[in-house]
Amino acid sequence: MLTGTFLRDFMYRKEAATPELIDMLRAPMVREGYTNAVSKWVPELFTTPRDALSLDPTNWEALDLPFAVIWGAEDKVTPISQGKELATLVPNAKLTILEGVGHIPHLEAPPEFAEALIDALKSMAPPHTQELEQQ
Image (cartoon, rainbow, N blue to C red; front, side):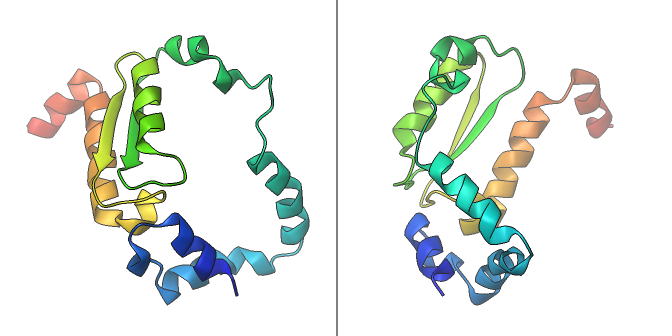
């Protein structure tokens, strides 16, 4: 019963939490073992291990791979300042900020998210792939 309430709490675009989306998110909840798996995961959601590699900025700075960050400007769960900081840590990272979108861009604004993702992936494509697309 709380799936819709919790989902809307994470969203800036509340209307994106349609009954169809809520039903889709509820579907796995009836599978055997779901409650046990979630009960093991939830404590990890609210604590960060002190030895987590992600806490050391030098690990982000050492990444040598294409890196894109797509962030909702209205994210109140993980503020945009954290997205900007993350993007500055990874060399050549591409940051795309979706205006009027909260914490779950792919559910709140699917077309805008898809466009940002496709643009990011295209910018990461090897040069010969881009040449083939132009032919």
